[in-house]
Structure formats: structure tokens, C-alpha cells
Length: 108
Image (cartoon, rainbow, N blue to C red; front, side):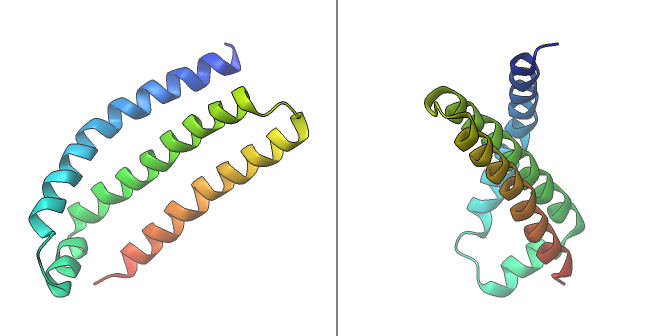
């Protein structure tokens, strides 16, 4: 299978997974928007919320990294610069969700 075809399939699968997670996040964000700090900490201390928010963050960054990578492929002509930009993008798409999940798991 072609590399571009794999990226396209992963984009479609991640977007399908993101739809219910986005719906869940929007509904819960509206419910905690006007709450105080302790209510928000209580919401994110719930195991289900931690799991769903972690999945939302991971798939969101995965989807955005694949999308931005396609922009790099289309608009950056120099291969060395394109490779460095893609590697930095993928590295940040791993590190940022990982840090977020670690901080979320420490929350009690």
C-alpha cells in the first residue's frame, strides 16, 4: 500500500473516532464552563473523564499532525527541510499529549 494511501486511511479513521469524542468534549465543556476550579478538578478526576479526554487529546494530535504533514508535503519543496519539519511535528504530537496525560493522571 502506498504511503499516501495509508496517511489518507489514518486521517479518515481518526476523524471518525474524533467525532464522538468531540461531541462528548463539547457537551462536557459547556457543562463545566462556568464552574469553579474545584468542580473542574473533580470532573477531570473522574476515571471516565480522564480516559475519554486522553483519547480525545491523542487522536486530536494524531489527526492534526497528519493534516499538517500533508501541508508540508504540498508546500515545502526542499526535502531536508520537509523531513525536519515532519519529524518535529510528529515529535511534538507525541510529547504534548504524553505530558497532558501524565498531568491528568496525577490529578486527584
